[in-house]
Length: 72
Image (cartoon, rainbow, N blue to C red):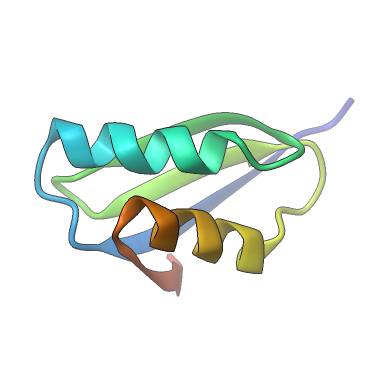
């Protein structure tokens, strides 16, 4: 099964807690197999089976309390 790695720019993350909140929410999206959030860069890397649903990622980041700028 092939995976797709997509990187998003997120604003508002400042610490490890922020990274954890974003990771937890985005991890719940169907097809997502791995998430790495980095507060220092504001980048969230999502590994998924197939092309990720950008709106689902946006909603998950919003639920965590942050803003998705778009794909990095």
